[in-house]
Amino acid sequence: MEISDREFHRLVDYMHDNFGINLSSKCVLIQGRLGNMLRERGFTSYDQYLDAVMADTSGAEVTTILNKLTTNHTFFMREPEHYTYLKEVILPWAVANAKNHELRIWSAGCSSGEECYTTAMLLDEYFGKEKSLWDTRILATDISNSVMDKAKAGVYNVEGMKGLSPEWKRRYFRQVDNEHYEICQEIKDQIIFKPFNLMEEMPEKYKRRPFDLIFCRNVMIYFDQPTKNALVNRFYDVLKPGGYFYIGHAESIPRGETKFEYVKPAIYRRGLDT
Image (cartoon, rainbow, N blue to C red; front, side, top):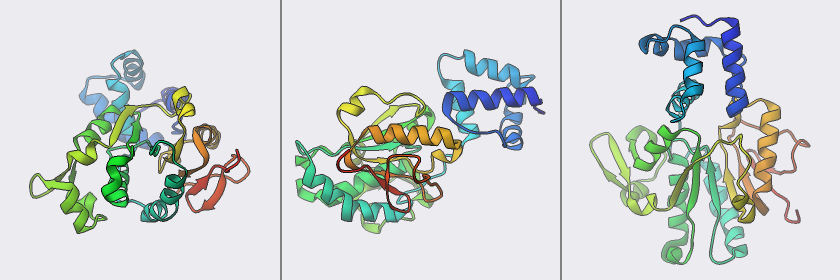
């Protein structure tokens, strides 16, 4: 189904204004990913479909359009340098400065859960027998309810598990069938899943109980620079002094446009005295 220039700009404005997603150069992608679906569902125009999206109070249509126009490809132990740095640098710092034996970690844009579960397994291994003395539950948020439902189920195919060690597969998963494994309940219980649109203001409780580490990896690739800068500064405000911020290795934060200190590629830090 062809999209008119007016319909294209209306859809682009809707996605940007509500979700920060920049599709201004993605006309072919929009037609390729939405055209057949609209025909199959009986819509006669993109305008008609967007009207339906905006009128649907259940959120189902918003989830559908987000899933169609963004990519949710991820896997376990993605960008392993982040996990090495977490184990060797961030956790010793966070443990030494923790109050009430609590760590605060947020997986923002958690998608289907591989990132937060990888982190939970690393924490379980790191703390060992002392794990029960700590609250290390991870906040995992996403705008898409459907990908969070997949994350909550915790069932994954073997292809996405290639980065995991045999020991972790044995300790933290049970085999469902020849192609799928389910993460154990003990690790599932370490994740708090909540829907959240990153374009919204940060909840006050995040500011009252700031985070030691925030993951927001390969999420901002869809955002234009002003949207990225505004979001990054909102993340800064809910980190503890000295807290760390992870982005994807394909992303960058222009130096001088945010208050973060550069640590190394894709790793930033809030100043200790701010």
